[in-house]
Image (cartoon, each protein chain N blue to C red):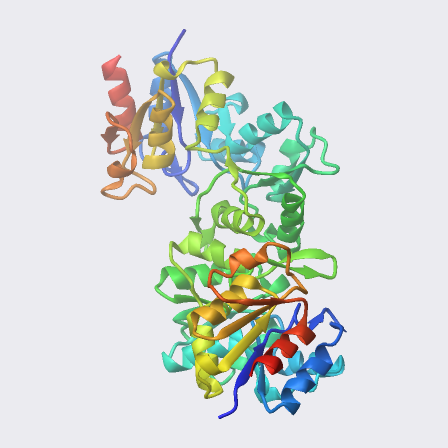
Length: 253
Length: 253
């Protein structure tokens, strides 16, 4: 069985609509060397279909089935536990859940809903939680760099609902064990044969290493000096960028 | 100097637009016995003016200057510290802050903004906090009973902003020491001459007693059996309702 490389998207392969220098070629090099390449992301403000389109448009050769996202893990979880979700997510993401029953919800799914985090929607979610619905989140990220500066991500709204309903959310995105375990299962690859490359020390690298993978931190995107300390696992590799990460993988094995 | 009685509003004097049985007469009895009566509330979804109008309409004889609210304490605090607020509050409350400069804000004030808790407003608040503005809240209440069931109060949004900006809010409503101290100052009455009556064990009774007042818990409004344990102070009096509370005050002194 060939080894797998899991790669984060934003900050690792691209920033906004700009591919990072050497990133497109680095992915190609991995493929040519026989690695199975998978793209793993917490993104929940776009559907997988639109996310793929955006990546292809800026030059990445990626197939639909190679893209693995937090909403996908949420979908699997809901399906497995036969839960009926109330979706507090961006409308663009709704298409990923249309196959699930959504009447009389017993789960509240929180993604990065942006302006759809309205008082009415949050009240609806809150009332369901008070009735016993399970709180499930794609992630706990506090914010992201938007067009007009920093913007709130799903995390603060998860915190609001946890506070309101006195409950704890089940977070299914990176760095949760559930995320990485579902990805391993999905791609039939054991942790010891996977290398995860990302710019988020805790979420990408720490989470992957805790799940038994090898972790490489790239110093691009949101990376800031000192982030190495946030990995929380011994033995991580730190390199300047994607090209250097791939170089390390190809040299080592 | 005559003694003071501080009385909570919702759940103690009335529920919604309905005065509680005997509450109107109980307030009158206190006045006739020479007590100075003051009404203290965390309410931030209505201005003091409108709150007063609503109380008068259902039969309470209350003067504007007898009404003491969390937004009033926030106003004093902003004024004292020369802070320029960004108001994440209900538009009805804005009139209470028009005398303060609001350009280039260095404080974010969170009240119960209801449907004005929009993503845009929350982002604005978040960015100001990231730039160093102080987070100030009228309260941390999670929810209240609205027309269509439970609704989110200010608390969850305070929690969201605290999480997002990694900061801690200064809460100036009940049960904070700041609230009760400002009220004592406002009405020139020392704690040992004040009795606080309320239906919230922690917020009304516990907070007042911690500030050196006497506390009476009424078993109306949001009171639930066992709430006595939440007072957190020894020596509280527990009575069925306002009439019984006043009876206790008049009998004792």
